[in-house]
Length: 377
Image (cartoon, rainbow, N blue to C red; front, top):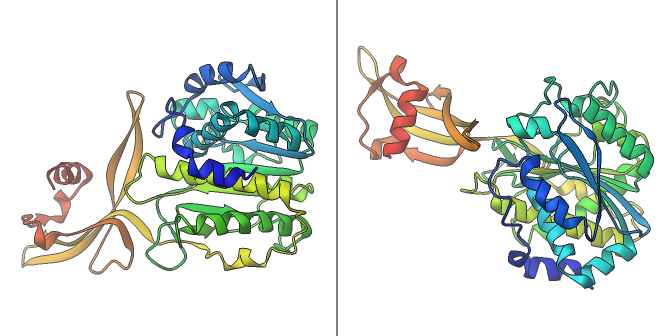
């Protein structure tokens, strides 16, 4: 069966409506894991620093062994939502379930960092970035992932993340809605056979995504750091792919982005199953533009700033700071730069000469003032 055509054509039927927004915790997925335990092998594989459970799902017994983990960084939840859309697809479609069971053995850790997910932080409860702990394995979550890797012996690893709104897909005004990376496995960043195989799968996903989000797919920087999990697993001989969920226009809850991550997961699986992935078709990977940091969330162009002598017009660049308040994520504006001519893009840009704002002394142009102003305009 054509998984890609079936899934993309009927995606709305498979969205897991119980997981929405940016704040996704173990408490939210726990009842879903219980429901899935009837068809999938669901087991607790350890606990976090704060004793929160960490689970894995094992599906199928086929030849293609793929290890997938999400929310290694607790505040990167888009890929977790996409995973549960994919799990819904398998769970509600017997033909798909049979296809997966026959052709794949999937090992999925939906939330590796439950403490970070609960606090909505990148780090774990010991303030350690788990994606910089691959060598030391100082944290229980790191040791759990490594133990699963060693025991499962995957053919591929899918390392699922979110990226910030700052990234463009190359040097133009297109946000990097999805980015990919096959990590380096040495300081020289050699294009090894394992990397070529990863690249070939990424090429297939990019080809699919260009139909939906043309010029919005980027390639993440491949600077080598053996402390990173992806670099470590790649260096241990397993083709590894990083999936990075980015910004889609007006989609700060990342409900559109989750769709394209889900599409990508299905595409990767079908390609791996139907193709002898040798790495020979890797070259187009380098045609995917590298991510660049060209975006702010908002740019207020020609903002009137009062001085003693006159009114100056400057560009004000704003980032949103994601803040957990009463179990909801709020986006608080924060001023990052004030310059005469800011040569960056804004996901939203306003020409303040057309808004009728009174000139403001620069010492009064603070985050509190900005919050009130944005509510009004």
